[in-house]
Figure 1: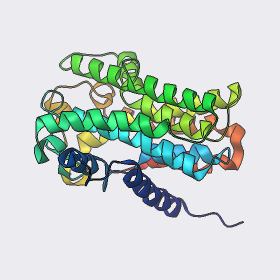
Figure 2 (figure 1 turned 120 degrees about the vertical axis):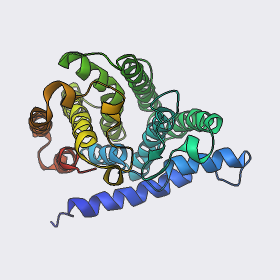
Figure 3 (figure 1 turned 45 degrees about the vertical axis):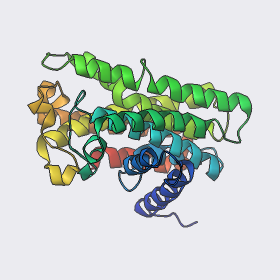
Length: 296
């Protein structure tokens, strides 16, 4: 059996997700047209689609239906996009560049950016709630995404991040912040992919959870490394903002070399968590490699 190369598989999923997002977003011709245009601007034509890639890779473990994976991937990418729109606003990180283009509040205005984020969040749950899985499973998936997005997940992590500017956090405190801010949505992507295929056993859920925790922290460690070492053109967003804003990071706490070592350790932990799934977890392992080895 011929195995498709990872970069070919990744590109195929990214193309599928672009089509799915376009399908599940309100058409730009619908009133209010400017809001819908800005939603398209925020979501389409940009990003690595790491979260939808995780959805598809986890779904492959249990032969999940392609349409359900596309739906779950679109929903979680809308949540991610909404968080970026709000994160870039002047009241948060005040950034002018995202994915190599002006941020939504710069392209449109602050009020529109606020509405875009609100509308994308609502749209995500509308999309996920209209799937064709069993009702109890669908409810569990909606609840998982809600918890990952809220005060005990992504929003809570952002609140801790904002409150931590200028403070000296311990490593456990920094990890807790990023397990919420970044890790919660990555974990949801992995579990949603699995849940689109079946009701997960306790052992399956624990293994996927361990994998997700490892890649969630690795993603942020590498983000901190890149913020300290790459330029804005490479990143597609403003480089060096963490240091400029006096934010605690893995690099500021551990130093650059120890941060790189930690990223590699987390990659190994992610691989180890998938042992019970054998070769069917190939794509999840490859995504862990992608997260740690990426240059942007």
